[in-house]
Length: 228
Image (tube, rainbow, N blue to C red; front, side, top):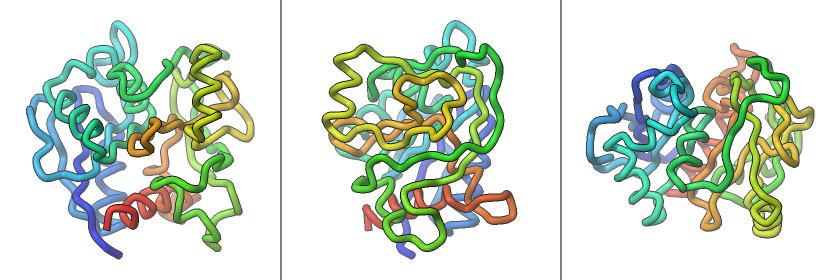
């Protein structure tokens, strides 16, 4: 497999940064570095992971403080220049707060933290994030099993935004059984140019059979193959 240069951003309160690092560095054998939130540059990294957790304790609003960290200015610049950015769980919230993705994430409809495996329907297979799921014998056609672990995963947007997301093929993943009340069962979306992905489920926690599913690794393999 070819190699990419991944950067995993670390905020105070991040707790999925090492999961992402392990998947990329040790399972997929990629050049991977941690990027501390106070750094002002992402350096030579060409794929940025904004991981899950509770950045700044989720005080004020999930992701609302993290978006002002120095590193995010360069992450936004990287995305604007066509660079790949993936926000997972709290990272998805941060990308929405940063304006890289539309919509927002609210408390789960149940008002309870949800932690379990879920089945996702891969709505758009023609993206840099999903190309390896086409005809892959290791996953069910058009589906992937990955865990969720969040209290604020209820994706919302206005009607015009939802129409635009659907019309432009920006909805990448939908829940087969909605765990949080998200509008239109949305689990993950990308920007119009297709280089920024935000998703609530955790593909980095489903990248080895020993943990119950390796479906998530093919998302990262898709990205690696797309930039080499």
